[in-house]
Image 1 (cartoon, rainbow, N blue to C red):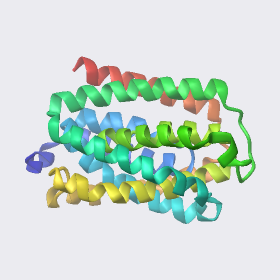
Image 2 (tube, rainbow, N blue to C red):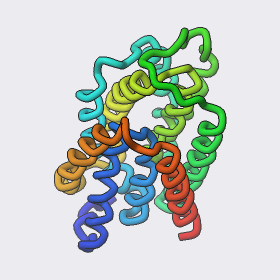
Image 3 (cartoon, rainbow, N blue to C red):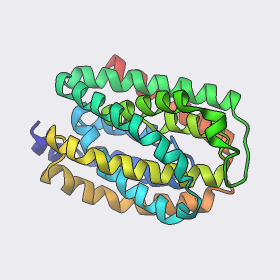
Length: 259
């Protein structure tokens, strides 16, 4: 892939990417999974394959800010149980990207976005909103098979489309995590997973010097998004925001499929 084409974006397209970067910061410190909207924007502005490589470092910046904010609330036994299955999913996703061309990747991202929207709708109907820190007996309530299933799917979707957020959100909520425990565990999870994806993405030609320069410009917008998310996490109308996220995700997925 010739990432020099990344420099041919217009001012309006850069503004859209900047807004998406701000939303990444917001999602990492407030509403996990909201960055599916960012994914749709990146895939609409940039070539589908290139968008995954450009978005990954932006996500890592958001992950670092989330870890600094919620580092005391991570539940490490859950993380260790998930990582082997996630690694397998990342490998499968890498092999898929080796085989798939830009059109297939674009259609796959669109389909994944619609799937994630469905997952989120299902999660909102089945999960109970709670506010404490740690889960109740995660090992008992989730089980190894469940962790492996969610882990493989999460690894595949995060490698192919940086869209593992809703999958992991559903797993953590179904495992009984409260708000701060949820945010702390997901922060460390995505920082470790996204950093581990960098060599794979670089090997596929999705990350190079040109894409990193664009990332450096976009990273500036992640920081205020993270501060807004931290301020809003106890004030936001979660139900309304999730409805907007789902609607935007569906529109983004359909736009990619019908493009």
